[in-house]
Each structure stands twice: as structure tokens, then as C-alpha cells.
Image (tube, rainbow, N blue to C red):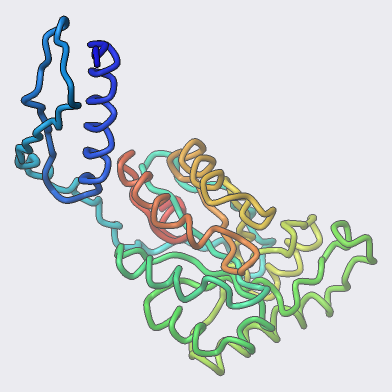
Length: 293
């Protein structure tokens, strides 16, 4: 049998690739394989030789030390607007400091709430949670954990009804109806945890007008908290798309809005977002942390 040298070399190469692939996969060492058979281009043989393979293990390089994680600076007292004045709309915090705020809306199911709390605890982050009163009633232990672990609360009304009616094509709520939504949620939170949602309010659907600011301000809510970056998780975006959006839109003072429900992939995306923002040098905190001092 006359062996074509080129075909022989291709066969040996294929064997090497298959062996290398089978021996890889995170063993902590790299595997290099060499063959001791090198037939002459003019060789004529009666039997196919069996190549003898030798393996040489090379120690993997030591891993690089982890990147230091910027701590979240302690919250400083916030100067409130005059009592009873219309709520101040907040879309973004202080841009002079490289810090962003995480806020999580909770109005549907418990979803990824526990996972989100685990992630925040592991990373030493205190965030803001805007829950509806109905969600708080249905998830009292999660609410207690949110408060116990030092997160800040935002009143997101009782049942997420539009105060202006614009988002749901319904009649605007009266002042009394708006106050009832706020008071009912505040009372539930107080009874379950002893904490308060004041002075932070987030309008359902982000819909508000001058009358909303007047009405909630008169009830003790000095801040109408909106956002700079919407993760779009509630729209069914994949975790990868959420991560890319949140990292690309980072800016000093940004307020992020996420959702805890199972219909959003914000929870699964959270750790990568935290790592990415910290790699960019950002501190991560709650809404009060980014407000001007």
C-alpha cells in the first residue's frame, strides 16, 4: 500500500484534535500531544502503522487576583422639599458622583425576588424596592426580608391603577382615590415591618401630571421617583439583551428600574450587570444615595 503523505498527515491531525477536545474542559492544565511517527514521503508499507502518542501536561497559569469591588458609600441625609409642596420629579440623581441607583418594582408575582435579594446581599448592595400594597400583602416574608436587609422602600400604590388614566384609558383618579392608594400601601408596610415608604413614590406606568404631584406631595411624598434606565425586562427581553442595555446606558447618577416578577429576566441578569458596572468604576446604591446633597 502506498500512503499519500498529505492524507496521512490529515489523519493524524484529526486524531490529535479529537484527543485534545476530549481531554480539555477546565481541568486546570493544558494538554499537548505529539506523534513519534513521521513516514517518509516515498515509503511503501504492507501494514498501516499505529502512531504512538505521548501527552505532556503543562500547568495552567495562576489566575489573576480579583478586581477590587468598589464599596457602596454610606447614605447621607437628604434635604427634603418643604412639607406639603408638590412632589419633586426625579429621573436622575447627582451626575457629579460616579454612583447609580438600583430600584426594583414588585407588583406581579414573587418571581425572582428571593434570588435578587440573595445577589444584593452577596454584593453588599442596598437598593430601593417599589412594591404595591397588594404585593406586600401576598409576600409578607419577602417584604420583611427587604426591610431587614436594609433596602429602601417606595410606595407604588396599592393595586397599580393608573392615577392619570392615560395608560389604561380610564378616568383620572380623584385626590381621595389617590390618597387611599397611598395610605393603604403605607399602612400594610407599617403593620408588617414598622417601616415607612415616605417620602418616595413611584407612579404606576410612570404616568403622572401636575395634579398627581400635588396630591402625593400633600400626603407626605416629596419625591416622584422615575428612572434613567429601564432594563426592559418586563417587555420579555432576554438576559443578554438586558445586560447589554444596562451597561451601555450607564452614566453617573442613573436610576435603574428593574422588575422582580417571573415575567422578567432582570433577576437572572443582575449579577452580570453588577459586575459590569463595578468594572466601569461605578458605586451601586439606592435612590436616596444618588440624590443631590
